[in-house]
Image (cartoon, rainbow, N blue to C red):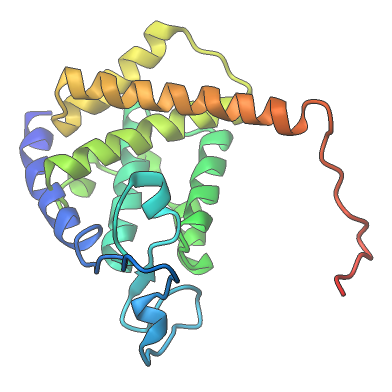
Length: 225
């Protein structure tokens, strides 16, 4: 475990400079125009990504408060494999169907091309070595984001699975993840509190939006004029 903690520092340095650092700031104008869209770029056939591997930021500015327009696809993929490996590790090699559903939805919201998402879903996390996947990124801020995503994946996944755990059970998996990532107990508690509040907010939105008026999908033969 000490080796994993030591190699983490390098892991987060790379992610800091590539996943969330290879970016340009969003312009502060009244009409939004992406700097990528406004330039003559060649887009890949796989989705919201250029042939150079610049992935549009998708939900990242709204979800993480990250003021960027694009991410590096290779570094982003490395981050996802690190997330899968860490979640599996703190749950003794297990990732539930609901947790994978959360990851699938988050990848879509993050504008990740479908072929990469399919690779995420097929990743054999049970055989993944923690140290192998935690040696190519770095930085305290990204450690915090990775802990946040770990807590989200577990909490929202359990919500999808309709699984209830004891407070002690959640506390253990989150503290194990924080220890591996080198996140201090105080910061870890703040991150977990954010996730708890967000899950409660989702429950509230579900009740307010759909509690009295359940969603009814349109007929299959419905066409939009």
